[in-house]
Amino acid sequence: MMTERDLRGTSNQQQSALRYLKGTMDVMEQIGAKMLVGPLYSSVGRAEAVTDEDYKAQWNTVVDNLRVLCDYARLKGLTLAIEPLNRFETDFINTCEQALKLINDVNKDNLFIHLDTFHMNIEEKDLAASIRKAGKKLGLVHACGTDRGTPGNDHIDWGKIIAALKDINYEGQLVIESFTKEVKSIARAAAIWRDIEISGEEIAVKGLASLRSIQMKNK
Image 1 (cartoon, rainbow, N blue to C red):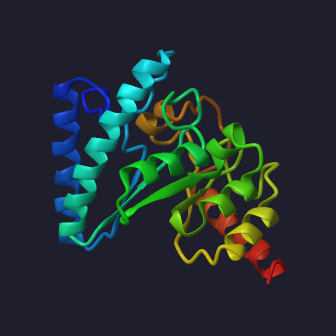
Image 2: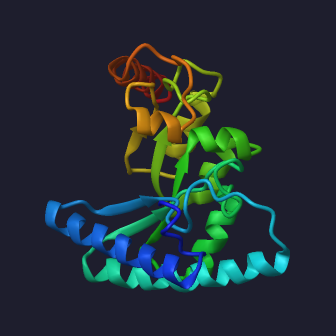
C-alpha cells in the first residue's frame, strides 16, 4: 500500500487503507477474484526502529483493522493473506512465525499467510521448515529467485520447497513473481537497477519449465 494508506498509521491513514482495501474487495467480487494478498498490514517501505511499547500499540491497531477487513471479506466470500516482507521493506512482519502470530491474534478463519521465496531467503533460517510451519494457513506462494529473477536460476533449493509444499498438501497457486527493468514504476519499487534477466517472457517460460521439472523429480 502507499504511504497515505497504512493500517498501523495515523487515523486518516488507517481509514484511507480500509476504504481502499474494501474498494478492492468490491472489485474482486465483480471479477470473480477470491483472495486478497500482500503486506496488507502496512505501507511498503515503512521500516523504522520503534520501541517495544510502540510496536505493541501498532500490533493491536493492525489486529483490530484486520478483523474489520476479514469480516468485510466474509460478506463477499473472500479470503485474505498477509505477506511477510524483508527487513528493508518493513519493520513489522518479516517472518512466517510473526505472520502466524498476527493471524492467531486476529482469530478469523478467512485470514491466511502469503509466503514469498525472495523475502524468505533473506529472513528465514530454513525456507522449507517455514512452509511446513505455515501448514494449512498457507494461502499463496510467490516463487521468486534470490535476485528477484527466474526461479531455478538462483541458489534456492527448489526441490526442498516443492517437497515441503507436498508435505502440507498445499493446493493453492505457485505464482512466479520476478521483475525486469521494463516497467519503470515496478522496477523502482523492487530496486531493479540492472538487467537481472533478459525479459519478462523469459522469466515466465524458463521459470515455469524449471518448476515443472523440479515437481516431476519430487513425485
